[in-house]
Length: 427
Image (tube, rainbow, N blue to C red; front, side, top):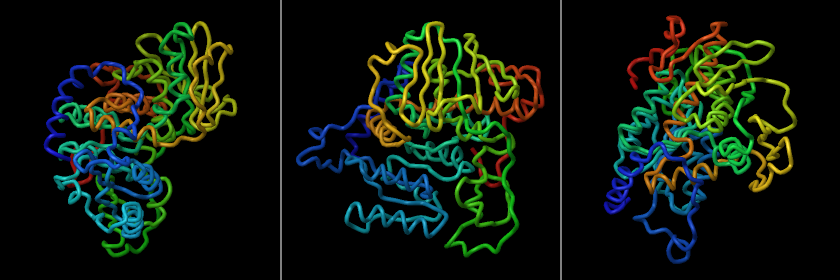
């Protein structure tokens, strides 16, 4: 982007940090009239982007990004040659040229001075490490989730982005889905009365350890760079199945499990509804009668449960107050305790497309504002998930101090706040 745009960003940076605690507005979409003659964006106004990790989810995100008229994808980094070739084909077809450059080692892409922003859609073993490296390299980042593997990483992610002034958007795209936003609005504006409980359905209530499968012969490094694929995760022998579908670190390591994978969506909705983007619950209980519970300092109860839901699709959330309740999910329906609560609802969208969420990110890259799933929101949503998982793993009640960011009087729980990274990687 041009020097003029960089200066413009710095001016907005001072304003955005000063207003960091303010509510985040709905995403503003780029009007065709602002794109120049014929809707064509001037090169100086384009966001130049690179993508790290272009598997299933990464390819989907890339497809959404290629629809944005003010974004130009110039580079692809992936440890698998087949994915590099496929993603480059997508980009070159979109732009009608062959200018997209591919990298096996993402650090070469991060070092490019012309790149403004990055998509990080690797497996979760890389998310936080790559996101922090990107911020230090002066890049804004849209990062898929789970974004962190433990509490310490969550705090370091937020601290790095606050210190560097870069823009971060966690991949919790339901924050930019109209029906989820409407349900949160009911909770935050008092239309449900005083908020009493928020319910999340993470899709799994167990804990898990990182995967380990029988050793297979490693392919040549140029075809599959297994060592780079593992990155900061603990070493294990190569097995093709570990690279496909849900990555072996999907649950987040020692005390991962489904609560982190889907919780970074549905617990995130609860955090948002309770205006808790800068804090986390202070008390946590392990699973009892099929659900884990937590309580915020303001008395609101967080219920993490795996059953008892209506047919709302994946990732449902429910908010209860003294005057009523609302429930919604990925099928786009909104259920409420009384019909008048539906007044003002937005459009119904099925599924969980990322287009609005990516647009929110790109708008903030330009304005230096805070996206909806910014570094603060991402940090504390993940802390809440990690703390719930820790209580489940240890099978006892835990008390958490969100100011000191430590468990009170529990050395074993505090040891689980962090883990070592494999050499030579550092946060």
